[in-house]
Image (cartoon, rainbow, N blue to C red; front, side, top):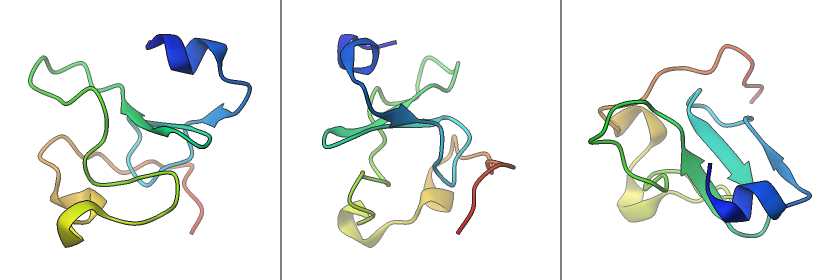
Length: 70
């Protein structure tokens, strides 16, 4: 976990990808165990926009979050 995740009073694994931990007003951190995975999600952001028009499922580390609600 990143320090910002630990000290934040607002975080949740509520992203379309099961590895995404949204930290309120900051970003989405990736918790994939693969050493090649990015530290921060490059596809999803807390504001719901996508970087460079990419979607969550475009990430090679993407795995659907069974608890995600659209």
